Length: 125
Image (cartoon, rainbow, N blue to C red; front, top):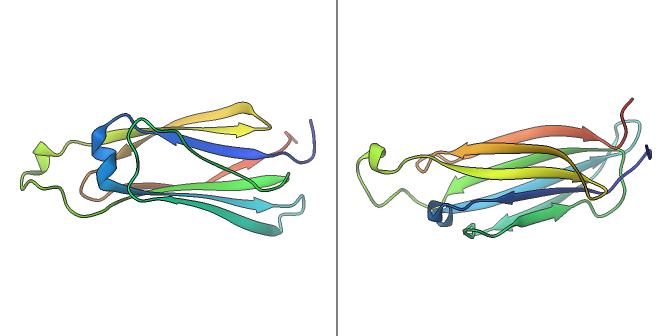
């Protein structure tokens, strides 16, 4: 396996409630000795339903840290929390266009959600 790779994070939500959220994606890149090279960001305000949002590293790197944040734009237009159920955001991580991980993130419509510091290497040691 190569010592470096291009990484990509992709997320999608099929629930219209996502359009009440801001989406922030971050890929922080590292070299082979663990020195941070740069961070790439994607901010979508608001998130778009049934749209694949993707962010790639700008160059081939040894390792990444991927983070996702879904933040409510405001509060739901209802008073009863049970009337605003959670929904899911589906995601996947690709290394050189090869799928290496999938995940589902449960989003609370009142508080949002985050998943931070998901680490992936370009090669298996």
